[in-house]
Image (tube, rainbow, N blue to C red; front, side, top):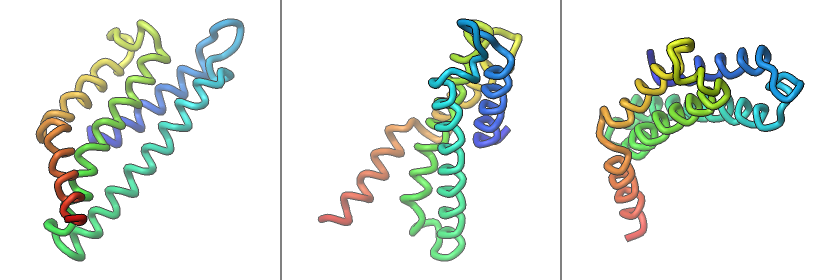
Length: 137
């Protein structure tokens, strides 16, 4: 499953859990913190989509070398964001989020592994920062 698809699944599972689960006498969907998590997750997914579209456009129009900054940004932002969204979904599910009852633990582990698949975040951050710094030297 693609990373953004994992994030979408995380949002879906958060929403389903929020409307189905009661805590402290009301649905989780009525809790302000839950609203913030869901809204932030949706905004983050849309930001990632825009970054991917911009990067694809740059790759098509000016080539991969000129799109390097955006490519590095995707390699940093996407896995990190998806892991964060899935982490919130796990949190919303409580202990069930790390059980076999929900797919969240498996999704989280897969997304976290992808943060390492193309090199650790720090490698991409260093590459991106070096390119940014060159603009000012």
